[in-house]
Image 1 (cartoon, rainbow, N blue to C red):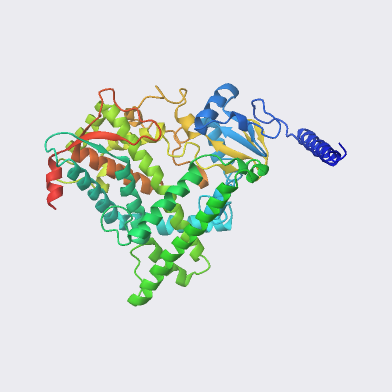
Image 2 (spheres, rainbow, N blue to C red):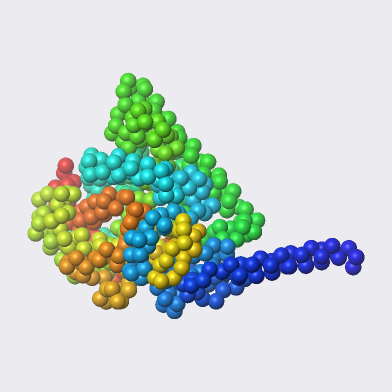
Length: 499
């Protein structure tokens, strides 16, 4: 009994301190916060969270309003689920909400949260944005990489054609996601480094395998779920393996990217001059004259953001676009008719043709409306107290803009849950009711590139093949199941295969 008394005393002290902390937090509670569901001590509202998170928070917004306040452990969160409140966030509060929250994964995989998508607002972020705007995503730079996009899309078409050759004239079942992923990863990596990591012409098989494994792991840790240790520090003791794995992955990633830079640097010296055919070469050439702006770490960070931010999102959009078309054969037929009328079957669609294909663009927009690749966009963090929807939002609050919820708001969209590309014919994409790439100063800088790749690839698939669903009921693509479809070549594929 005597031996246990010290532990009893320590327990009493612990609970007393906890009670004082909770009481102090209650006294300091800001006034006029957005509505909030009932919470429980310490956990806050974590017990309400179920994946997918955007659907859970959408349901809460239906009960508590378009601006709600939550506590995820020690973090205060405000969720925005209306176009009006989103407009406030991206206009009058744009500067206040220009920071980003941090997490264990983003800190370690994002170079201490200093890469473009994760960096806090300030001189460093402005420099990164300037580099992206002028040196990576400018029309001139994107146009210079058009041959890469053409080549990878043609390779996709030829792969599909080869897989249908065993039953000429008939429909053949094909699995699409893996082919979409290979095409888009190769486009991005060839732009950045000049290498292919999928399919033919892979020069270093081991390097390609290592790259594919790392990208898969990075996506798992950055988009694959919620890490409880980010919200309750005591839980980090329980999830030590998570932190060890992320730290180990961070070191592997850094070594991989540094080796790429050294390889390009050595190649330039060996060749007696620097090629600027790839983005890494171009950035290294700029490093020679402006070393303070183009450090190795910045080049590695930009490369990582391009690959991670631009591959899975575009792949998912491609997959959903085809899924919607297979389930809506009238829309697929209309898209094919538009392509036949404008382009025909004598030559393959090119990027300059996209502007003449409004229905194709509407299909992509409607896909992005129903299935935005980042349903919450990238979270914001308030640097000062501000007001949203008439409610007070304290500084250091994480702000989620639920684009998925806004895109399906029946007050904004007629028949909001149905796939109707026609809705965009009259420009029905009001600035803050349609947010697949965000708005304001932290909007996605890669929107133009994503639109080019997705529209050109999707248009090529429709122009070159006939498509139909495997079942008469259409496609209902559950999470984790790869998209399969039936296809057969159209007339133009014979011409493409000959050249």
